Length: 379
Image (tube, rainbow, N blue to C red; front, side, top):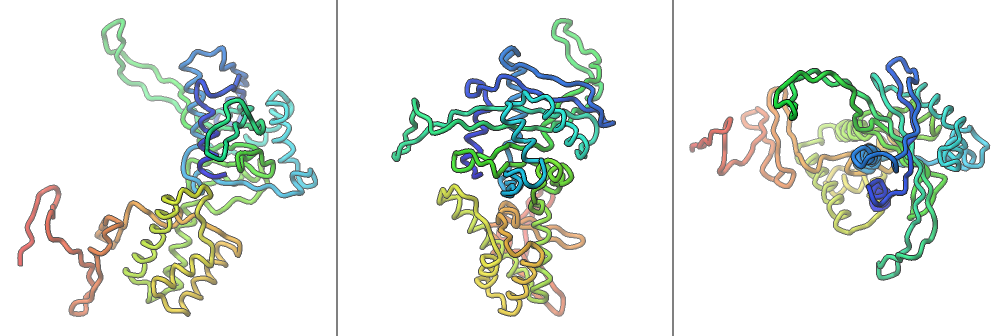
């Protein structure tokens, strides 16, 4: 799924734009026991309660594509029912619009068995039938026409956290009194949409998986629910890419080269954003090698980098560049000093050896402050 398709489905989870009638789920305690099952009607709930439910569900379709939102692809054998029953269970939930009680209970059991959420949590499930509007060649929407009905289930796993006792103001009494501890539902830790909404149409071969923590993909859960391969977590992708760059370039891994690589990747991201291309930007081995070549890296070191890239990420790997570079920060770090630089002003920083000592030099013409105090740099 691309960002526009995700945004289109996310808009469905707002008052006035959704026909979701109810939310089903279960409340699980820290001992992995279901303490309550529920089927709550949104049409009979108050507006505030409905808004809060929809906000929680909507968060499952938020974040950065490739980092928090990850495409899942099922094999043909899974879809055909020839390998495992994970896809079949999801289809049973979808086709019954979550009314198949046996399928719900089986899903709860599999999820609870593998979830590593600390403390209590909710498993929320909804089903939405979206009458997908068509668009004319000039971009105008057909208000009275539809190409298909997309029916998808959305799952959100939300921690339930205990508040702390505190003083609170009671308006009626015009006084501050102790507020008792309570249990509040937190934003989702993980979740998914099934099936995928690709090319604004149903794709039974795909799902969209959400994880709040980009360092942790909860692979035990995804293996049990999807039994489909999951890419390396976004944070691990950056760590691996940085290690490959440093180890393959060796002594040639200078400050200037790393800055140049960062600038190249940031430029690619910016150009892709300006182009309006709906499909996500991906960096495969060949594209990564070209970046190093354009940065003036020696041929033998470029070859070493390409080989390590393929070994560590896989021969068919294609990574979002935004996972490999911080577009908002350029940081130089020594054991006792950390320097933050505007990524667009990397030209202000250089490295030099003076009298046999290595230095990081920063051009500072004006506006120099130390702990908020403006200082002058003498001759």
